[in-house]
Image (cartoon, rainbow, N blue to C red; front, side):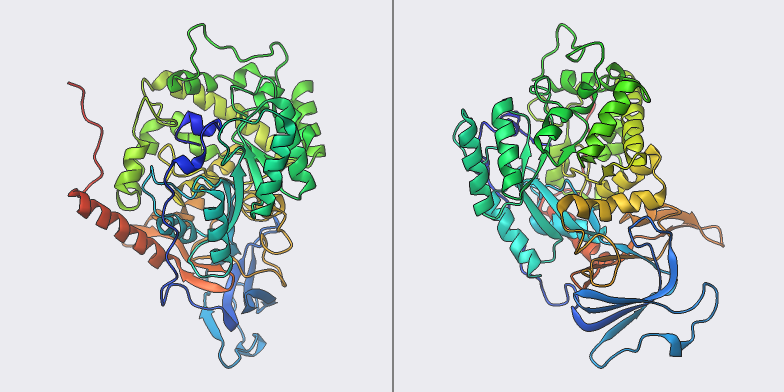
Length: 529
């Protein structure tokens, strides 16, 4: 999502807007390691490939890579100490009996905040790491491509506490005016590659220019993604762009349009105005009903062609969740402790701002969007079942989605769509790594791969909510309501981060921001006069 329509259309250079401060250097005690040898003892592993959980195992890490994964006995049977890998001098071992270990999560749609949201990079990174996100695709680099590439390099060197960053430039970034020829677009892509960008994000464009840019990106080894914007989707839907070589699509725009059978444009009301975001999003919630039915010839043909093109769907179900339950999104329990006051203001209804379209939002709009989700989810589930790649992206920082928390909600929504929990974890790990072209390094727990891991004390296959920073609610043996779960450790590049401490740091940032503003709670919406 982008806050201003002009920026989203590429008509204004992001340099016109202030970038946020880079993250501070890692402080002493902010992540430990990497170690000559690190052993995670007695864990149950969910390896990210779709294989079932297995344990007890000892994971042996040397430096920043997984050296071996050793079976050390049988569930429910005491472990023989003599059967375990030996700890070497200078090494560290962590007893994690009863814990689950997963590959580090990949957020395929992770904006690093912005000045308008008032979200420091440190705040964003710690929320991601605190929820097990160790790799992020930055779709647009709204703080500037050079800023984004610099943060990537600092993260790669572990100078900052941050996930791995894959910077994608927003198409047209830095230009004073639109592209008018395909060659201009090609030269711009070449410049992105020279400056260290790894890909390009499109929001629609004139077809010949967009095609030239996608083809040039492919020739340069860059990957591409598109939000098929409604102002251009009639000319370029997902089939069009995928045939040109687009590597992934965001959200769902462009899919229903590729599935039209009895029309060529969306059924817009006569008074529709795209610039009125109530019109835009209310009518978007009725779009999937205008597409071909599940299981029809058209549905199957589009699905099969996209799969044959090795195309990736990054649905970001989570970012539109408020459309079907606005109250739930607005009142999620983590906002008070983890959402900065500036970000909270950014979320509020506003006729002048993108993504703040709650002007007349009620039960009719929510009902339509629930039906929209049902059909959207049906396509994504069917796509996965026929061998298509589906990944997890959050687009947090917009529409009441706070970083980290919104990502875990995306996992829950994939589960709602019909994914088995193991398929959810695969989408969140290995599938994302494949889409980024880094599956040889991250995405699964295998010997030789980088040590990017998530450690949690509860079984996420039984309840994905245990991955939330606020945990899951249970009733204890003495009949008390208690919280359980939350990520215990996030390991990135062999460095062990205490996830609870990362989230405590965020709570402190939020509390300090409230203190400076003289408030103790995020303000609610006032009654009309």
